[in-house]
Length: 460
Image (cartoon, rainbow, N blue to C red; front, top):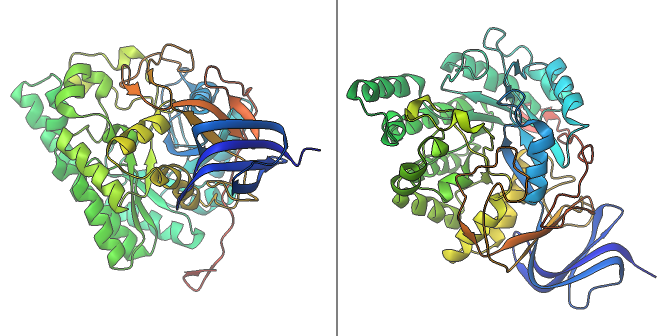
């Protein structure tokens, strides 16, 4: 008689340790047992040899609806399933619809649910004209965090939140116990540098980095963390391309404030002098890709424990929005859901960084960050059996090869991956076999944070 529904034996990667010849057992969609040695009987039992068995990844930053009638959840969650990402957290800046009210949250849940192949959580934001009035209702509607920007890409869809309003929003979030995530580019500084670049006549791949030098990020980060310190709200920078930014956050934490920083996989993989030069608009991202020396600095920040999350900032722009010879005219952002996990594993192993960081930065910490850790983020009995398996088989990434990416292009095309995803499971059910996505639309569910009551300014 089978004791479990599913048993996977291999090299089990946990946030604190690695279990050689370990196993993970699941029952009724939940992790039931983790151990070492002879694995127990199961209805479905896989002895995977040297394969890596990790908790399913939680991508903290996904833009499924940035381009209307382009990607949508039907595609973003397909890419996620193919990449071993079992939960995505979707951003509130949807083309034609700012998610800034309880009604907008509900509409997005209803829209995504029949499409989603993996589980999903949602960010909320504010309409600058309304201020912080709807923060509480969005928290009650189930958002997992809030997102703002110190830079205005578009006054309606991606508006700048000026300092006084940012302070108001942070203060309104504090009683909910949720986190305020902020896009970290100083609006005035960026616009000044952009005008200088335009006046210089530089329009090629160099233009983007010149228009957003390091000071534009670092000024914004001080604003964000000071606002958090003033209001008592957990302050989170949603992407940082500079080692100096992680040092700034560490200083605030040393002083007793909740200050965290997220590192996107592109900042750990791509560099300006090679990849941006080669790819042009297809490597245009805000903040920009930095020189190779900065990439290596960021890996040191991972090893030091100063990176809180790793995410993709995934967005699948159509090629016509990414191939303008005028670098600044291209849309910002790249797809990455399919390849985040194997890219991180590759980068860590090349630098001698323990793979325990993969389990921590792409599963455990995101679950804690969004208060989903009652059900997500770890191979711990009682939590959802969300699992990704990577086998030691080299592949060369090609976004168009398997049809799981709606646009069929990627800045990561051509990268050799020594470890390849061979399976992923969502709540104990297989969602990919490494070749094709098995999860049907509607498999994924909306997940909301566990409630936390705030008493006398402290968390109960």
